[in-house]
Image (cartoon, rainbow, N blue to C red):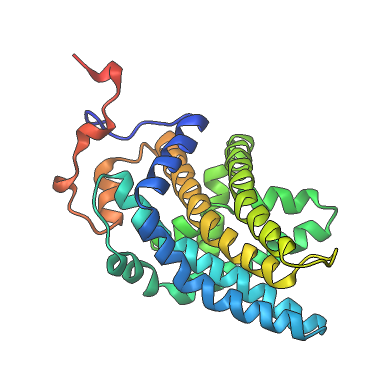
Length: 266
């Protein structure tokens, strides 16, 4: 392995690196997510509030999940570029995912069906699949795989590392939960201060839901990408050159010293 190449990360390093990338590229990540999530969330709020049909609700839920998957995929390029110290743009990030958007959507539907079926079978299989298939989207986009192959690849990467992957995801989810409380409590407080009704304001709840999705989706996407890289480094010795080429970057333009560890110093 060449000097200053990629090194395995601890769970704490994965989360802290995700926070750094999220904060540094917040504006770009927010725009990437908003273009997918905002229109669908608005339609979802209107359709669900005006229809009591279970079929409509199921279709709406699937649409939300599918566009959330696209939004997550759109973040992948920006997150990966920042991880390598390369400045990404909105157009390059969108182009990276848009050419595979059909396969991303197919992957999202298959994943939802598998995980949903797993939860119906006494919950435990659903929890297992939720983690085991977590890395399918990065695998599909970065390794140029088909949806089914990407799901198999994710399961192979998490094999033997399931509990570590689950622990990292749960830790990130807890961080997201507390961050998400801020807009939720804010909108509920504002709505509550303007009405004497004891019931919650559905409009405020919808707004809080949209804001929460916009804030949390990029962070969780960042965590998933970093988990994917970490497992590939641990299991396969993923190199900077390999990663750069999968992102359509010239490996010679990467500043390798950013991956320098204290024990690498002479």
